[in-house]
Amino acid sequence: MAKIKGTIVVDIDKCKGCGVCVPTCPTKTIALGREVNGKGYNYMQAVNPDTCTGCTNCATVCPDTVITVYRVKVEG
Image 1 (spheres, rainbow, N blue to C red):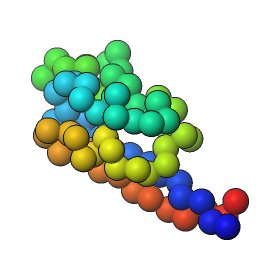
Image 2: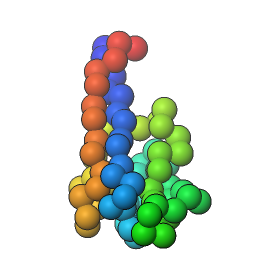
Image 3: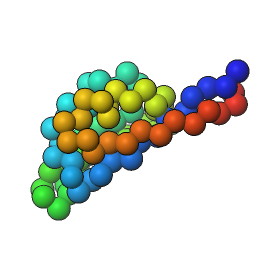
């Protein structure tokens, strides 16, 4: 049976680090990073990218729509 593997892409320059997305991730894939973007905000990063299921919770709650989620079927 195929499993779904997800991955996220964040527009780092537009992320303001509000953190709304972090508690919505059921697999603890994302967190606010220590690095800052050009505006001085800590931005969201995938800290455990292998655990992403592609659920899209993070992208759905993002007020600035800076997160894009990709989903791929993988044989498992």
